[in-house]
Image (cartoon, rainbow, N blue to C red; front, side, top):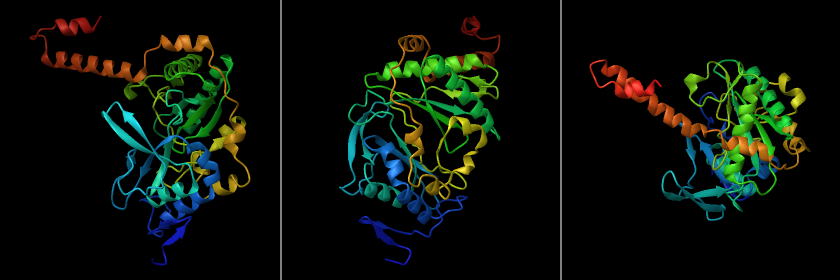
Length: 334
């Protein structure tokens, strides 16, 4: 081993002095040191949940890894999950312990995206999540304002949530859900909360899934449900400066910026305390009326898919001009 290599908790760490990625301003050692320092904070967010990670290799574009590579050590916990989309079984990691976390760090896994359900019951998510995605530009303040709409919509329904920066440009609102809610009901409740938040200020917030339909508004994303993943609290992000998804008190949300929380600043902020655990409310039951309303709202991805096809047909009809059979185009305008 060279001087740049070492072993921690039985994991051989290599090439520690290499740059982490272009523009990171950090080395692989900085990533390893960070995850080592905050392991007691991030592991509770990952434990027992099938994990996807975003890795980056020198000279290559970042990629999301779900299926564990064949060279993965036998001691890394894993679980098989059937993927409907690809019609195959995927071997997901379960990052349950410090040693596995260090192994991922050595694999240059920068981002950690666990499922919203645990391996004990993948049909019963533990959290309702709204992702507030602002338009391009310096628009974190818009995401904050939209998050407050979500908080109000939740309060009107008798629910409470905690908020964290996404580590990118937006924020995430998490609502712990009591045991028993099905994937379908939780997804419906998420759609209903998003719709109610949009209704509170339609000039600021939108539930339009198609980007071109958002009109510079904040997208209240209700699709983080079912088998979806969300970046974990305390996870680094693959962005300049290596920011971290970090919990914020509702009262302080307007006074922070995503860049305040990085792999260099966060270890001191979590020394001796767990801000995410402190802020998360107790699990709550989903109100029946919220679930019922959500079941009347189309699933955003499905609706967007159908709308995309409709627009493609309309464009083709327009391109063909009046000399073609225009009945299809006429039908679309109704």
